[in-house]
Image 1: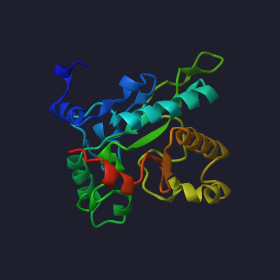
Image 2: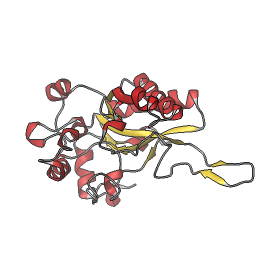
Image 3: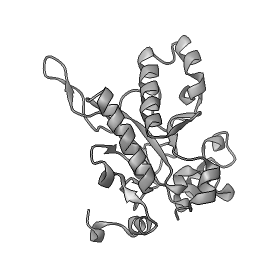
Image 4: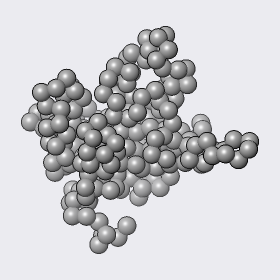
Length: 222
């Protein structure tokens, strides 16, 4: 996309030193969930953000994770659902959950926001790299579809079924399948190769740095 085609927000993000994920690894799928209404807020939050941006070092780390995933499973790819989130959007998100039991899942802007607001976190899942068909030629899974592989909950599911620490218990209760656990663990393993750590309450959320490191060495994205 040319500079002229970018929105004012996208230009501002790039001027703050962030890069388009696809400029670092074009094989990673992107489907920004806050550019659609099928997220936990039920509304579109990214009206003028259509590109997944990260700090260059975060994007390079994500490329390492993608390379590891495709080394293990050439038929799979990472898919980014959210990357850098400007603080203005973070405020809108906080306003939706403020005063509810869902507020534990959203970083309060008044307290400095979260690592998405620094370009140091991604919401991510696994998807098929190519279309998958059965023996009769019927399409089973479309590469790059908006849902990704089944992981037991949708991305953005605010509840205990998404908690990493509770996975074994949910498997025993048959709320999660063996396949769900295998896929989640695979995602964590390949992301760890890139230097990412999972957020314990969200199987899809991975941080590249700690909050202390972010506040000491990086700046918030406005």
